[in-house]
Image (cartoon, rainbow, N blue to C red):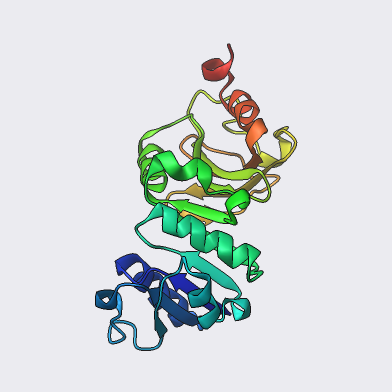
Length: 223
């Protein structure tokens, strides 16, 4: 897979190293000469160019890329790069970095962004996931499917403690993906009962999240 990364700062370089380690071809693009440091990621291609300029992206041959990652520290630049990649070059997959939470609403398909990655949201979700029991915590949003990856630590007062997951009437457009227990990963089992303290990971439609909460912890979420 060929991947272009707009922004060759610490974030862009880290992404590039991971992708190269997984066998992908990577092009790093940055308009700042001081950011062009091929010795930091020697196996990547490098291009001194402005990711917001159409001519620069033509030089980068974005039409030959499978994925474009807009990873600069400027949200405006990330939006423009994503939009140009999608509309002018037909890149199949775009990922946009959100630097400021107030701008997250802009990072949608309307701006050419297939997936947005908001560092502030991810960090707050990880904090919530670590300290909350009995509440759904949204970890990731799948833009095209209008669905989210959510987590709940099952509390002792859930009526489904001791019930096999296969017998729980989960709402429509909701799937239990995995169970984390005692540091191990378990597949949902029609016979194995859930335990208090289990971390349950679901993929669920946005509009069904509240129904899932009410099902698993009705005394906390009804009314």
